[in-house]
Amino acid sequence: MTLGFLLPFIPWIKAFHVASVIAWMAGMFYLPRLYVYHCETAVGSLSSERFKVMERRLFKQIINPGMIASWVFGLAMALTPGVINWAAGWWHVKLAAVLLLSGFHGALSRWRRDFLNDRNRHGQRFYRIANEVPTVLMLIVVIMVIVQPF
Image 1 (cartoon, rainbow, N blue to C red):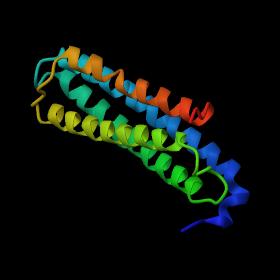
Image 2 (image 1 turned 90 degrees about the horizontal axis):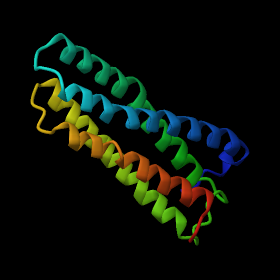
Image 3 (image 1 turned 180 degrees about the vertical axis):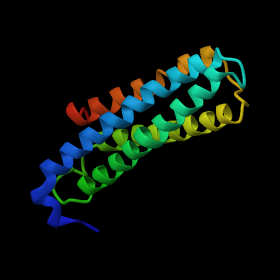
Image 4 (image 1 turned 90 degrees about the vertical axis):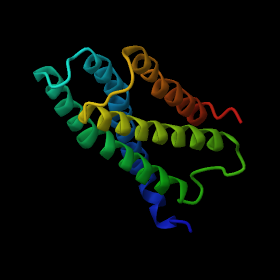
């Protein structure tokens, strides 16, 4: 299935894709940092409850819409004839990194539910390391799209 009628709108689709990726990544960079700080609070404390609200709002109002829009605009470009050279190998690596980012998104959601239910099982160090995952994957995506080394 191709969406050839979208070809005249590709610059707009790319612009909205980039903007939605920025929103998604901003949230993915910040949420693990909130988890680091949330680990320092006592269960049931006012601070802990405040972090729960901040984490929920960030996830529901920025990260989720950013990911959904990124996928929608990305798929729209992928399904528009002539936008991607399917013989090139870079897009395979980019797709793998985006799938891993989506999986990390799911892990952030699970960890948020753990905090929400006062059942966090990880320490600050875990979340500090987890905070680097989206950065590495984002670099892979950017290099694949801009440099197209394969």
